[in-house]
Image (cartoon, rainbow, N blue to C red; front, side):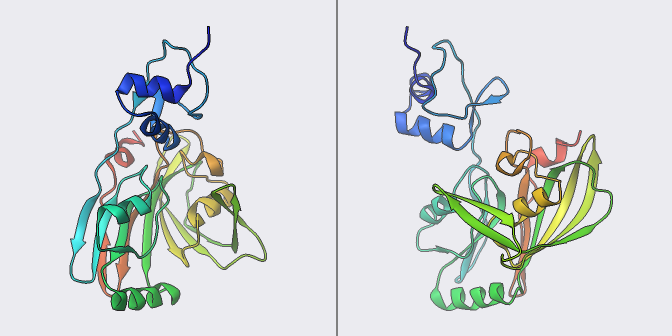
Length: 245
């Protein structure tokens, strides 16, 4: 008997369209037991029971005539947020798997002013993450990065001919063989934290592309941004608090 494809069985079980089911699997939201379903078109037993992780709603933190600041949930593309908040334009991006402070601008004049601040490295960007291994002392990763496109995916690595990038790492809490760290970044390259933490042999938990173990999500959150004298903060998701216990 022919086995059904995972996304078709999921669509049937959830009462959704095939494309919605495929999107849920591609986002990393579908599990069988504790195992993530990796391939939407993979064949699977017709008796399989799926577990679908729910996505939080995007929540505005701040809004004025110039910008709107969102607490972006994990598993959502920055572009989707832009479409959700009409009349605004992304000022920067967060990876789909990363949650936290995302800023969108409402006019060109403010956008140019903000971009100039990013270029001068005048924007304070603080993240929090759970990483593999024990980090007992603060350290700084000052390594140039280069980003390559593989298919439609970006992959970043340390390379002598790369662009300058600095990440400051401070341990906050140790639990078992993992550490919660504060990360302050300068420059803000594509996948900077993910590539730097892999290089430091402390990959982010859940970040399988960069050597982290499987988890329900990539344990990286953009906690605080200061731009043009204003500070915006997105509280850590609940999972970050009890992840160490």
